[in-house]
Length: 297
Image (cartoon, rainbow, N blue to C red):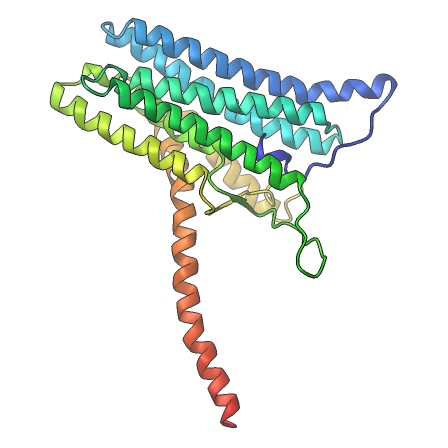
């Protein structure tokens, strides 16, 4: 399930023409599924024509772009569902299936076909790592579904409000987005490189896929950006930055998407490190204040 549906309540059934509004967010979800299917097909076609490096690169880039468009559609369906108050159990379940395909199966197949699948000696481990990425993504979605639907009761019998500013674990669309950005940045398949470089890049890609998979099932916090949107209280700051971002993606999509996706993945561990450092700095200060109070200073 998309993380964007976390705080979307399920509305009661509608009758008449109002029921048609449910089709709008579901149409974006279907488009997301189409992107995932298109990415898988292009990855398989690219794997078949690895000897033709130019044609293979074109097909792999198409697959990466499809995952990127799926990312966009996945973000829009949740926001539109909340804005139009058209959330439903059907839409939530359909969105979960779309995420498994577009951000689980599609990047796993793309990494295998574009990267380490044809590297001598790495066929089996490559298959295993791709499956590991897929299963971790599925577990991430399953955990999210449970957390979103199960009330959290404290010892006092109080159900605290979840902090919607953060996700627990790397969201699966962001995980798929990193691989898509890498392939879009350099779509030429790894088997086209010399043997030494092929093994180096293949091992690096295997390690990256494993790390991203672990981050998905980790408990690290990732910013959700749910306070950014059309209701932002700082439009004169948000709009110029958003325009600049669109211009950067339009003219320099390879660099901008790679940098943005990488920074998002890295910022989760950085937040954890910063939290640990801040707590260690804070403890001595609090201790000194407490001792001063006790001694009457």
